[in-house]
Image (cartoon, rainbow, N blue to C red):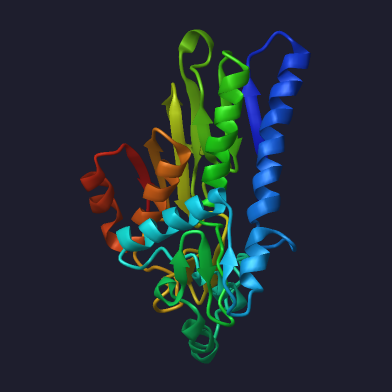
Length: 277
């Protein structure tokens, strides 16, 4: 998942707690192994190495491709799983390097969901194109793991995969989990605010960890696939509450892609959200 993952639960039986954690971890690793773009031999690697040939995929992969296609439409083309190729130009490590216009221009012809042929269960990429499920994979993993955890225990339990969170049941007498939203840099490690979560999901999108700082301008890691450059005018951090982590993550990302209109977008969705600029 590219981040720390944890399970918080209140169980008196250490064996049951270990079994619960193993179940969640097993599902997280399964999804990582199957869908990570960094690993060879999985379905994403087969698609990305297909060199223009059609690839038939299983139902789980097809469902993610359908979801990605729907997000492309909902975002007016800004959420695009073929845009991962732009990582060849950008390294969001807190440094100050920005790519040249020529480098971005050389990559953009190989970016664009409309260039993909997708008719379930077969996907065909043009040569030199790739897909990347990084924008939806972690939230999907949280929801899948939460389903397994719910089947194993009735105890208060919270899953946290790098800030993407699902609370299965309220915690003890307080009936809520206390979840801190990380403050922007310069404010120490304290939380900007604390959310009391009884049940459901929270997901956060922003540039706290992945950014470039060049000549006083901070560039976040969420890119506009039509230009190859980071979205401008977006909040530094957006946290969204929803019934599922996939839904919360989708809304948080679509809000960032809305740039200066992020809050207006979320208000129109009728969801609870917290924003830092």
